[in-house]
Length: 257
Length: 342
Image 1 (cartoon, helix red, strand yellow):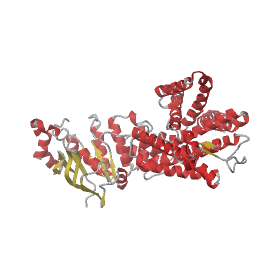
Image 2 (cartoon, chains in turn red, blue):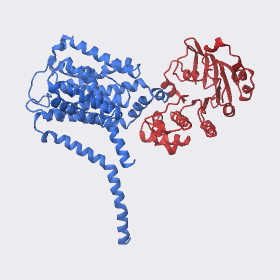
Image 3 (spheres, chains in turn red, purple):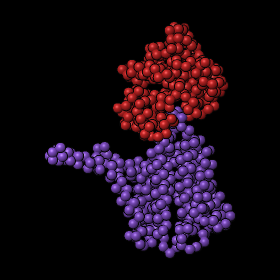
Image 4 (tube, chains in turn red, blue):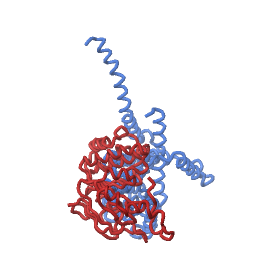
């Protein structure tokens, strides 16, 4: 039985349909890559799954529980952790404190929570910066901090939004290694990623979105060869009719990376 | 071990012990001294005026400290705290004048009323973020004041006088000498400090700070933001309320203009901001500086030009806002770090 089941999820913002009847399932223990050009609705789908947006239609189940309509904090406590595309560290806190706040869901005592936080920071290789403030970190380090923070809530499913976005290319191998180690911890992952090489190498399965709809769902090799996927990324960028440009944010923008 | 070795051991041990002594115990010693000074104050200053001033410093410090729990730690700026102040003042007073209840029970009842009110106000208002929350609390404060002015049962605009009784801690009244009031407010304030100190060091404090820093991120790690904002508001409302009851017993007269004004709500906020929001000592520092300062400027500049005192007061406030937004405690911390390179 699937860990996460998404059925017919639709999310509209006014006239813009960000997600249109999206359906797919995430199996326990797999790494699912979520790809699609800018504006395809990947991040919107994350917000819908984690309860920050309420879908206009459709159903989402985590294990056996319906999670549509629940608050983000409730969804997290059920076992879904997440990072943010636009990073959101607690700015006035040290790294250790950032992760402690999350760890306190299971460890009320600050001392125990700190020990646990340091373990997660060590896991993402930030232990040496435990007592510096989050604002002093580089983008790549902040991403890892968010991962540590999400992990400290002990989720079964982790949603990672753009792990390599804005990260300089030398740090990318570290992040890929980290994803491998997360799987080693028995976590199920859904990863949004723009870097095709990265997503192809880490994913067991890939779901491709375009203009809010699922256009492909399968193993990386298959999806990579799918005509509609290639078209979504490259082909139609050159034939956008002027009138359609306003229908969705940057509907067919070419992939830059 | 030879004598020389022992000597060497002592020699290397001694400075280390001295250092740990200095690091760990300086705050404790300072705290002890401060407490001693606070306890001795009415014995040294026997005139009513300095005592009255000290009582008001502590009263306002307590209000600012309570406000700091919701606004400083949890980041929800309320400008309607006079509501809780007045609610308890009126509750305890009405219970006394109508059915003759003891003011101490009245204080607790009033605090309960204030907590209930804080939940009723907080639940809808916490849907609003940032400035909008602040504006909503101003509106509620104004509504409550208008209601109180027009409600005859609680004395309306005429206000409410409390009956004189004998001097006793039991009935919370001291007419011949006001110094017991000083020790009562000192105790209440110390309790408020203790609770804040405790909050800072437990999960509650971490959750509050997380909500202040980034509500969405706080939710993503499983923190119910509405629930914890309500907890913060209830705790701080209870302390503001207790201060309100104290005020009623101290002055023995209250009317809507003295316990519900917007200016009181703003003053509470200003004291905490000047001292340093989100810090343990900021509210006390702010009150200890600003309350006597406003008295001083009023005495020395108030009579002649009417508004000169307010100009000076306002100018100082602006200076703090511009040069040190993290308040005087922030300034002291920055200086301390530079000085000792922590």
